[in-house]
Amino acid sequence: MIEVKGSVIDKHTRCVHYHSERDVIAIKFYCCKTYFPCVHCHEQHGCGKHVVWPKERFHEKAILCGVCQTELTIEQYMTSNYHCPHCYAAFNPGCQLHAHYYFEM
Image 1: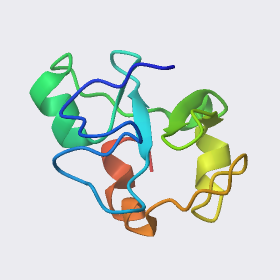
Image 2: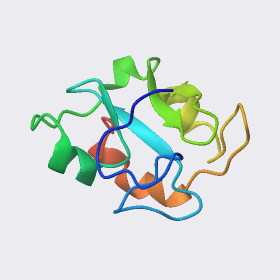
Image 3: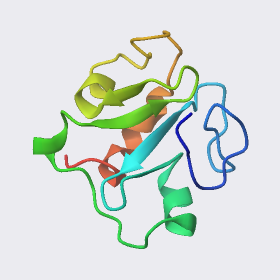
């Protein structure tokens, strides 16, 4: 099982900031290569050096499905139509509003 740090409240990577039925991903932060459920968890418990993933690294695994523990590349996640390609768990489409916190846009 991959460790997810931050204010995690369940085994599906939900946290105190985002905990809807579809909030089941964690993001490996580029700056510290550590998984957190959200940018707020990284701000509170992370390395203090917030750096987004550069586009040329979108082929790397940086998204964790909290349902099946499958690691996805950023490209896979961005083209997933908000579902895990492995277990088909639904991801929160609202996360696209926060993509600039994690990925170079």
